[in-house]
Length: 445
Image 1 (cartoon, rainbow, N blue to C red):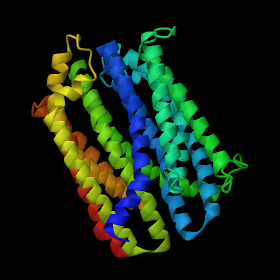
Image 2: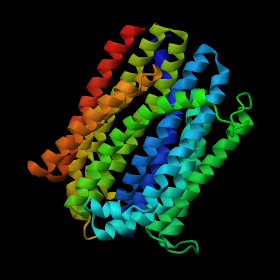
Image 3: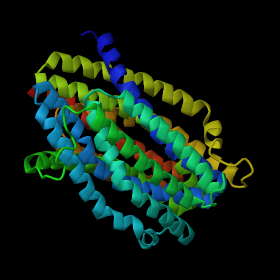
């Protein structure tokens, strides 16, 4: 297959995934925009609360994400029975993880106070997190279902379910945050309640589709029966993926905590800039997941030439996206930041002033972020997860968080210094992981 053919196949598989991720991020942006117009304390608390929830969710999602490369490899090898086994045990692992972390969300205020957050923000964040605790099991189920369908290259249905969920989330937010359509005015609790309803609905609809449209795998047949071998495979593949995700998401959550030490205005600006960068990140993520499926299939067939050409095509697409990102972020930062704020808010000029500096750093580190997520997708397609996990921890925490603290506080650069540290960590991770794929892993094939 030519490079153009690879790029076309990647687009066919990846564009619906990108669209579904964008729709999912749109839910978070909807929360941020509406809470930003409701009040700055609520926006700051949602930023902090969602950062905590996302760290826990992203670790647990490792068991769901592991389904994708395992199934892609199994399909390449013609092992259809493995598809059902690992999907069912991924659901088991997701439930077990959720039950462990739910108490941390329900009783989060003491933890937030202990790490130096303002009492008002900590109290509001706990209100939000108690609703998010309801979300975590259905949200993790959605990850499993999405990975299963992606590995089967049925990505269109993922897109449409997620788009409908985004519209439902916007309507519920509008009703419950502000008290419209006869609903009670719940403020930040309304944002959490809306997300809970949407998460449950998404899991039910996606599960129903799988039950009706993929009967050949009988995913839910005797789902209560344990399968030790499949569970172990999901667990040992999922834990490194989850910890890698934790290392990266912890980098941004740690930055949110440091922003909270400075004040609610930098924390609010951080939240807005992070939502904007997330829009670009999920585009890389969709491409990365498509690459995982295609590399996994090629690896199962032991087709090295197909694998290498697909990897080069994916990197080319990623480079084009990076150029577009830099152009948009540097040319109109005030316009983008202003979309999240009430025009009459007296703190709007201060938030935008801080946010412009963060958007400059975001334009830089999105290049590295795209590189490292593409490298992770390539490595996962080869079933390589443990060494990338170690690289992620060293890069994100050893360099990213430490560098952010030094530049932000010791060197006196404030919020921009914190984000400069993030950029350093991401560039190191990108370089290490690309080296591992192109130099180490390909030499073994």
